[in-house]
Amino acid sequence: GQQVMQIPQYQHVQEGEDFTTYCNSSTTLSNIQWYKQRPGGHPVFLIQLVKSGEVKKQKRLTFQFGEAKKNSSLHITATQTTDVGTYFCAGAGYNFNKFYFGSGTKLNVKP
Amino acid sequence: EPEVTQTPSHQVTQMGQEVILRCVPISNHLYFYWYRQILGQKVEFLVSFYNNEISEKSEIFDDQFSVERPDGSNFTLKIRSTKLEDSAMYFCASISWIVGNEQFFGPGTRLTVL
Image 1 (cartoon, rainbow over the protein chains, first blue to last red):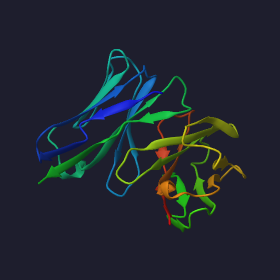
Image 2 (spheres, chains in turn red, yellow):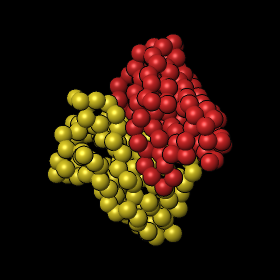
Image 3 (cartoon, each protein chain N blue to C red):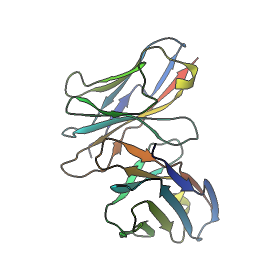
Image 4 (spheres, each protein chain N blue to C red):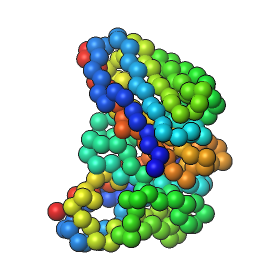
């Protein structure tokens, strides 16, 4: 079946350093969504990418969708302690019947 | 701001017992989902529901699981005979579809099977 892999599993950074997490799907996705889950919390939607090669920015966060629509990345510039949490990508097939979540990248930011 | 609600927040049950987890999706949303997350692991899709019927289910969603939307408001997940390995956080989510495709997650129900 379809799999979505995400690396790295963990990332520890010093506040102010950059952070990137990568997401790879075994099959082409119609779109990809990114979520953030704070410790003890629920996933919170960050963004959706639909077009091949799409790049979107939200303040210090930059999201990319690969040309083949099989991979994606999230880059955070100058991390802050408020960025702590687990970041998940979630790919959808060509309808929204099912979302395939990546394994997540747990980000820890040291002040 | 509208939000997805879930009850109870924590459910403790004995192995073999039936549990019903309840969710109230955001009003006017059309697509509903159940996910589970074993502690420290990824979010796993269980089932999606649209137009009063199951759209898709995963391999996890076997005959022990069922979903219902009994009154146009609540969306329930029933586990008929719980197993130890059913212990997890269960999240409900909904999508508007008309306005957008972002999933709004509820706060979750932590299920502990003893």
